[in-house]
Length: 327
Ligand code: ADE
Ligand code: ZN
Image 1 (cartoon, rainbow, N blue to C red):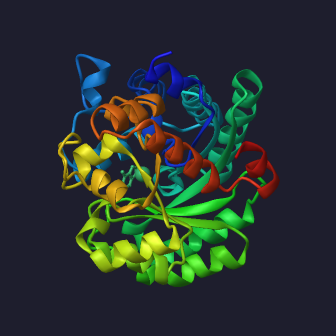
Image 2 (cartoon, rainbow, N blue to C red):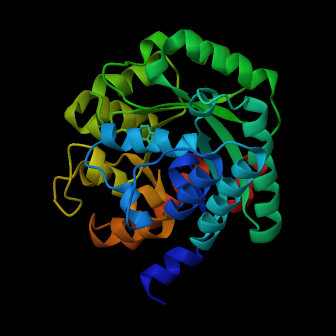
């Protein structure tokens, strides 16, 4: 068995994936046509997903999000995303979605949730993949909109909605103003995580840990610019959910095979890392391929891969009994 087959077959978690970023380009074009939404004209569906920075990417991400309108659209994108996760060997998926993006287009939160829940149920039956939902708070909208979003999430709470994230453009949107939003979510029993240190400074990682009290850091590459913070994260066993293909485009480290790539530095320093796919078709990847890149480009050893898979189980928000069974 080669390493790729081994990676595919080992049961894994996917903890860092955005539902809208996981829309296949042909599905995006189909939905845009069906719903009369304008997307940039392209000769080949794949050309929809070409960008050079986080800002460029988020423009397309928002346009594609606008193409998803009714319950069946949400069911379809959820089902297709989970099918692809299952093909990569994911058995448990905690995925973000972007409620603000759809509310902007007049799509009610209830519509979004209903379609997503149906897609999850169908995918669990067909592909044996269990999943949970983590609505993402768009930091660009500011803390008042964040607080309203948490209220909306709590008003429509179901067991499948287990936490919140913080995403979109980092600078100049530091985490501290969201302290009350996250405190409210935590007190209400939601788990919390935040994108930090992908394009924003190491201080945003520290702020996410101290002000938001997040349980894990999504991306976090700029931690390598602050030795004191690196040591703290190592001592506290902070989990970083890294995404190699995204890191190569959006972070300051474009060459995954460079010996000083941030992910390589994080690994060498002994930080706890799990490997994920973020926005897979938008970065022409999937979960299996992210692990293959970790091996072939970032030079993870089989032991490093084993540790990352275990970290992805341990850092998940599965209940303790299920987690123990897996570990
Ligand atoms: N939303 C989807 N993907 C993202 C990323 N890589 N960074 C911030 N926000 C995102
Ligand atoms: Zn992300």
